Length: 65
Image (cartoon, rainbow, N blue to C red; front, side, top):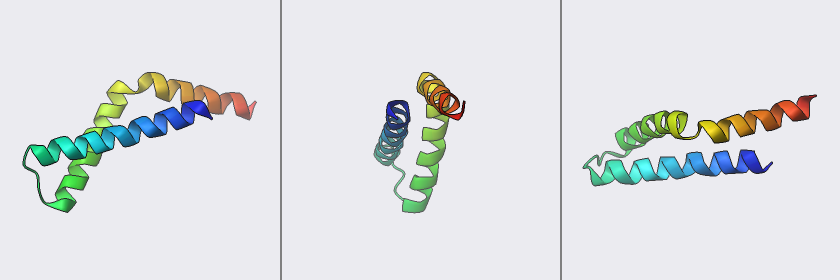
């Protein structure tokens, strides 16, 4: 379960970092801040966490066989 844990913690870290960065850039409305942070962290995780995502999917396919 380690790859799943690493990927999940990394995604949460990107979300928190996105929230902080967008807040510092002046986005103060809570709903818009949260939506924008989800979008930014989703794109960032797609680009930055491909290795962790591959490890997690490999772990799941191993368990199914």
